[in-house]
Each structure stands twice: as structure tokens, then as C-alpha cells.
Length: 209
Image (cartoon, rainbow, N blue to C red; front, side):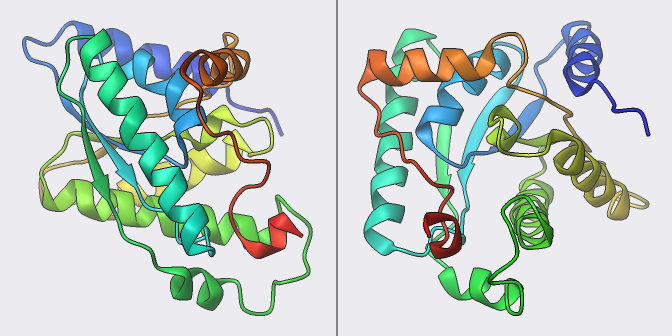
């Protein structure tokens, strides 16, 4: 099965957006500040962007708070740097959601079914919030990580977007592979530049283990 070049798909959508008279609204799921650091500059010029921090997989409360605070600090830096008005929305600390969806999958390897269910939970919540707030697109910074499967993430995103758009205003999935074009390396450099806390595990106790 051939892999889709989702970086190319991103640029196709970007080209369409550039032809619009007004910038569309993007609801961008963010897993952490380091990943967001390389993604936000790619979208904030062409989309009115809100960053959504919803990560029930982060099961330790102090870790959750630290990552959220770093994301908020990064967005403040970027608002000044790029003269934009990016908002940050906290989806709330909800480890019980993750424990429920991962039940029976505690010992499966990383990047397997447990992670895929976790991706879907976070993207479904992002889509629902984008729908309620009448955004045009939703996306995720998760595709920046070389440890995440961009094929699976984009397939999930497209499936969610298609499910709810039959009768009301469409909220479209913005495809991406943000690790491409040196994205992941940029995130490392930007993390150093801004002194961002850079965690060494995804978030759940199983990945930490």
C-alpha cells in the first residue's frame, strides 16, 4: 500500500486558502510546546488559529500543568513575534478518559492500537469543539513527531471530518506531515531558543514505562 504524502496535501490546501479573501479559522490540537513550536509558524499566517490543548493521555497532573504552561508561554512569544492573535484553549485534565479507552491495551507496544485509540479520542474532541465554535478546519501537531504515524493520524482526521459534515457547515480536516521540510529538527532548535521544557515521553504512564 502506497503512503500518501500528507505534506504535499497540506500545501495543496494552503494554496486554496491563499486564494480566499479572508483567512479561514483553524482549530489546532497541540500535544506540547516543542511540537507546536514548529507547527504554529506554518499555519498562523494563513489561518486564524486557536490552539487546543487536549491530552488526557498525560496522566500525571504536574506533568499536565507543566506542558500546558509551556504551551501558553510559547503562544505568548509567537503572538508578539508574528503580530498575531493566537488563542489557547485548555481541554481539561481528564486521565480517566485515557484509562477507559486504554483498558486491556496496557501492555501493547507503542504506536499500536492503544496509541491509535488515543489519537482518535483527541482528534474527535478537537473536531467537536471546532464544530461547536464554527471553525473551518481542524488539525494536530502530532504529525511533527517521528514517533507518531502520520498516515494513521491523517486517516483518522479525514474519517472524523467526513462523519459530521453531511447537513451542517463543514469543518474540514487539514492534512499535514509537519515533520517534513525539517520540521522536527526546527522544533529541537526552537525548544533550545525559547528554553522550552522538552519531555522524553508521550504522556501516559505506559509510554513513560
